[in-house]
Length: 305
Ligand code: CP
Image (cartoon, rainbow, N blue to C red):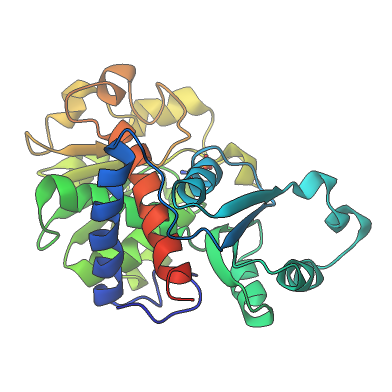
């Protein structure tokens, strides 16, 4: 059962809503594996992607998800749009509404941009990442991957290691994993991990070993040099020395630990290549599951219209 117009954040979602998406994504994944991936369940619908920040996985998987369900999918290329003539986000949205757009998928550098748009348009709005606030569809594909592999969230230890302060993925994951019954431990340099995170219900450490010890899931986060206003550590080699994870370090976690990363990654920094490509890595499954989860979200938001 789904009755929300928009998908804006995990913070405002219930556990039941999360499971509705995961259950629908399971059906959608079967379609992706089928030789004929397409159906026409959303053939009367249209989806517009509006990305103010770069993306490979999120944008492309929304485009393909819409296409697999028969919707018309169009990209509004921000760099070639009237945003560059000073048009506001709300005016852009109202214009897309007038064209009959069913759903707007937006990524924006400003926290709350998707919420602002959703309040001002009739179309369903999906938050594909707003500043350092939330990235709900990434977290949902992470939950789907964990659920598919481990069967439950209850009592799991999820270690998230890297650039915590600049990560919207970490916030969405904390909100959801806590609702689902998992424990979250965050680790990173003290310059990249604020004690505010404790208020969200996560444990915080600057010792990667403490985070890795007996973990069921290890999630690496990219060092976001583009969002750092001042250098948070001397250089990436220094980061790797104190916080990088190689196969020896991974032995501190459970034997069947899931190695995850939202990507893009700094190869050889957050994880060594043998960890990225090792038997515990589910990075490729995460990407595939991203398409299934985004199909599920489009189906739930647009299917009942
Ligand atoms: N994980 C993720 O959001 O990747 P993109 O930036 O490529 O969309």
